[in-house]
Length: 558
Image (cartoon, rainbow, N blue to C red; front, side, top):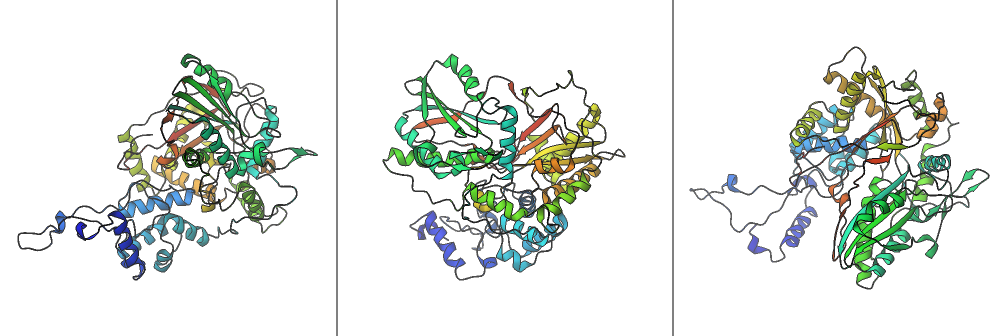
C-alpha cells in the first residue's frame, strides 16, 4: 500500500492486517504489510518486484523456546522460513509461511520428531508453542490444565523446592551459599530511593514465591506465604567507596539463608557517590531460577516507573502463583503406587536407561576428592568465536539436532579423551516451564536430568550426535521425575564426597536477549561483572555456555 494513504503509520498497517484477518482464512492473510512511498516499476510500466523492499517478518523479539520440544520446533520453523530466531508465540504464517511452506514444515516435523500433524492442525495452532503442544499430544504427553487451585491447610512444596529445602538443611540453615543466585547492577543517575523500595515491595506482592518461607512440622516442610509488610524485603542502603565494592559483594553474596524463617531474597544498595550506586540482589534458588531474573527485571521496571509517577503498577494479574504449580505438579505426576501414573511410567524409563551406569567418573584431577564437599571452586572463561558458532548451528541443522545436543556430544568426546571412559553420565538442567501460564512467574522450576553418553565402538561424530539426540529426546520426554526421587529409587552408593548419578554438569542458556536488560527511568543500568574468579562449585565440573546473537539474529559466538 502507499504510505501516504495511511495517516496512522504503523498502527494503521496493523489495523489493515487485522481487518483482513477477520474476513479471510489465516493462510490467505498477508504475512507482512508494509508502507512505501511509491511502487517501483519497470521500463514497461509494470511492477518491478525485484525492486520491492524485503518484507519484515519480525526480528528477535518476543520469547524464545521454553521446552526442549519447543526448541526443536523453533529450529524447524527457522529452517523452513530461513530465519535465525523465531518468537515462540508468533504464527508461522505471520513469519512468512504459506501453504507450500506449511507442507514442508509438516514433513520436517514428521522427520525430526516422529509426529504426524495435519494441515488443518497447523492452521489452528500455528506458533512454535502451538505446534509443540500438538507434538506432545501426538506422543501422549498431555496434562491437566495449570490453573489457580484451592489452597489446602498445609501447602506442600513442589518437588524442586523440596530438593532445595533438603540441600539448605544439609549445608546448615543460614550457613552455606552454594544455592544463592546473586545479581549486581551498576546504576548511575537520579535514583528515587523511596520509589525503588516501594517498587521492590510491589514485586514481592506480585510473586508469592518471593515472600514464602518453609517451616517444618515433624520434619516435613510446608509453604507459608507471608502477607503485607512481613513479605516485603527492606532496602538497606550502605555508603561505601568504589574500592570496597568487591569486599561488600563477597560478604553479601556469601551469606546464606535459613529458608525456614528468612525471606528468600534480600537487597543491598551500595552508594558510592551522589548519583552512583550498585544494587545487590541475592535470592535463594528455592524461590527463583535464571528465567525469573528476566521476570524481575521487567516487573521492577514497571513498578518503579509507576511509583515515580505516584501510582501503583497497573499490570495484569498473574494467571497462577507458584503454590498452584506445586499442587498441579503433584496432580499431574500422580501416585508412585499407581502403575498407570505419569511418575511410575517415567521412573521405569530411568531404571532401564541408567541401569549399570558408572557411579563415579575417573578424571585426571590435580587433587583428591575431599570426604565432604567444601563447595569452593574457580571460574574460568570459555569462548567460541562467531564463525565456529555459525558452523555449529549449520551442523546442528544437518543433524536434526539442537545446539545443546552438539555441545553435549563434544563434551562427551572431551571427557572420554581425558580418561572418563566410553559410558559418561552428564547432568543438565531442564527449565520446567512447559506451560505458558508460567512465563511471567518468578519461581524455581528447574529439574535435573541425567544424560547417558554412549561413546562405545569408537563412533564418528555424526553417529555420536545421532546417539546423543536419541538419548536427550528420551530424557526430555521423561523429565518430570524429580531428581531426588530418581536418586532414592535407583539408590546408588551414597557418599558425601560426590554428587549421585553424575559429577559433570552441562548447561546451555537459551534466554531471549530481553532477559538480560534492566531498564529504570532516569538511570543507566548495567550488570557488574565479578572481578574474582573464586566461586562456589556444586559439582566436580560445570560447563555453562550461552549463545550470543547479533542485531540481525546471526550467530555471534558462545
